[in-house]
Image (cartoon, rainbow, N blue to C red):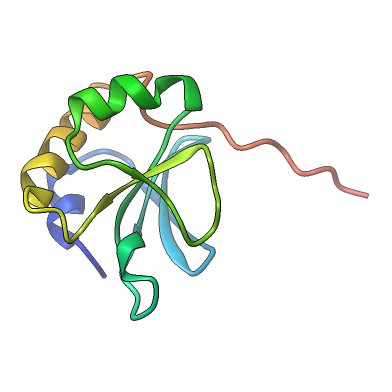
Length: 116
């Protein structure tokens, strides 16, 4: 499991794990909060992916240094804290605090899929 230290920072939150686009995504209740990606291709997107509404991106970037747009999937409502960032673990700790405080800056409720 990539970035296990980050999951430890979030203990004892009731995280629910699910695979998404080949990454490990995590939910609290119905809200998707983050995903962890570590692959051999497109290394710039390895790290902690943060689900967030686009209108919160600027505020989130002011709180967490090093955040970038995800390049490999073109997902606009997500940001990545890249593992190659010099202060990756320090900023991951700040992110964990936002998650534990249930910050409105982090997390999205996915749209429901229409069943035919």
